Amino acid sequence: MRVIHAAAGLAVVLALTGCQRTSMGGFSSQDSSPAPLQAQPVPSVSSNQLPDPTGNTSQFPAAPTAGAAVAGGAQQPGAQVAAATNALDVTKESMVGNWRVSSAGSSCDMFLTLTNLGSGSRGGTRGCAGELTAMGSWEVAGKQVVLKDRTGNAIARLYKTADARFDGSTNGGQPVSLSR
Picture 1 (cartoon, rainbow, N blue to C red):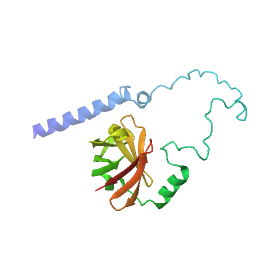
Picture 2: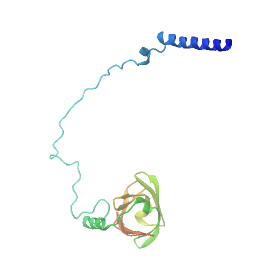
Picture 3: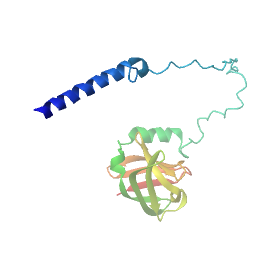
């Protein structure tokens, strides 16, 4: 019995010690809040008038004309619009795997993966000639498949024309076809 009374007494003493410690300032509510932050100086804000947008536009390139080649290749804008409107839907997952490539009268192999590489997915060619030798990545943009070089620049654009076939052209204007 004495052991139980001694243990109970010890528990009461420890509890009271804890209460005294908080009332003495060790863990009081005043110590738990951080000191307020001091205001910091802010640099002055300056303002200037923007130049007139209709004035000197020499820093901008000239607008393309209707007969000029589009940035993605040598196709005319009308041909590209027609290919885009007639193209079938394409998903990234359906592109993964091995493809047979026909370009400029020769054929080679292309491998497409879902491994990220820059803004696209990793891909490559084997036995290809011309611009397709530099292929390093690819991506799907709407109904268009864009083949890119190792630095991320587009080198060819293709559209799905049949269940397992894609047709398009390189930036140099060479026709390209992918098939399985």
